[in-house]
Length: 235
Image 1 (cartoon, rainbow, N blue to C red):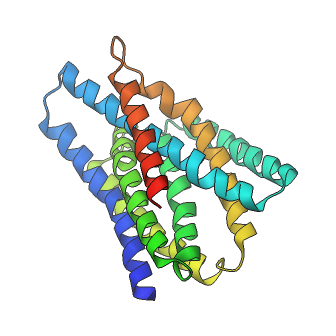
Image 2 (image 1 turned 90 degrees about the vertical axis):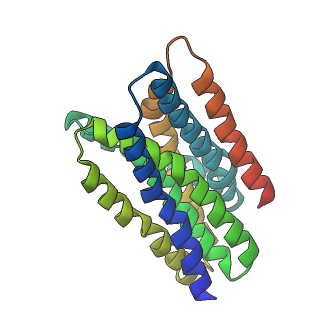
């Protein structure tokens, strides 16, 4: 049973380096045309929609089930404040890591949740792994682009993504062994992550998705959110 959990979590994380590799191929082998920019912005918007869906349909509802109003509000706002300072620091150093941070902020808590429910409901955990994997693909694509714009080296970024993909296995094992009987601790983690994700979405990610004279990226964001709705409905 534990091997199955590790395989589920590994699959969910594998799409991070895959998304980065697809972004690398796209950047180097597709000509610089208006269509390329529209595709790039649409993928960014699709990823933003999926992140928003994870926030609205998985992280916040799970936290609200366990936490009272005051600790929920304090924890949520604390997540936003922490990532305000972190984002401000990264902006001063010239980094462009908002999408990667947002990706990890939903990937890790969801992996922990997957590990926590695995022994109770393996089928739900397996479906959750698929949804997490689908989320990570466009998010990693966008994160690769952001890091390249920030001066990152392609091979170094892909190695970083490969390392980050293991966080899903680590998170799932933590959830399985440490938090299976601690739903409140998992809820605090999810709500804290939600505050940080929402800050990053509004401050950095969504403004970057807009493309002048085209509404296609906005439609892509809507489609990304719909994918999250479908996943939540299936799970």
